[in-house]
Length: 379
Image (cartoon, rainbow, N blue to C red):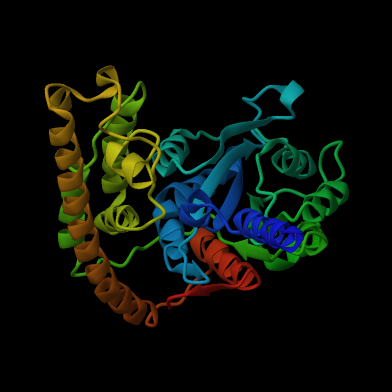
């Protein structure tokens, strides 16, 4: 009898050990978090930097589209972008003539909107100060596998201001944040004014560009169809909540901003919409349900758009599923056209020669630094 009790106790202990060791179904079902790329863009908006701003606002979508080619262990990354301006005498002197415009965010339409609003004025450019603010104030990931990078662009000595750039850059890289510097002018002048030293201190890349270069975008045969598909995709977005209507309006406004430049920029924006990096779960029900942030059947009726308020719960679900399928079909078509377009543009670019522009400088740096985080690019 005693042996029986001992045996029973052992069986119970083994069972309990197995129960606690085995992951729960909730743990097993929990999706693995996506890899993350975080970029903070710090733009000099002093009087001489109109060309830099023009490049930034017209080439944002091209830079984002490069991120769409990245994969870390087969997974596409989320992308967060922050935007600062500095060196503008129209900003408060007490804030060192700098301003955080947008904190790290997946809302790329907001970044575009703010880029198109930027104006130049005056000029006291404190690089060390704005790097320190970006490093300390933004919500950077704690995961060492995520890519975290600052890109600062300007054309005055890197040494200005009361905050020593050396301290700012060293502190940034201590926290795993790379600092890339982009001097708008002659390569050697940027070296002499310590832009290269700033990058070297923070494991970054020093680059120089001609910020006044007129960007000649390659018009491709695929552009018209890509643009039409991008417009059609807007019809698949279902705005909800307090900010939904404003965000959807912003989406249309950024289409118009891109179109005001040229068809190539508009095509680049449409290709961004076809990628995983264009995420709008904060205001779009299709993205929100896809990411598990809302259950459309349980959503408060007040949060729904007018066309959904009279629907039954089952009709709501069917409506969102329909929009999701429509969007996926459009995105697949855009991505096929993108492959054709990229080949065409690459061939045309071989025939050209010119100074490096902001998009190419950033793309070159991101590719090299992402490779160190085990990212692979599809081309």
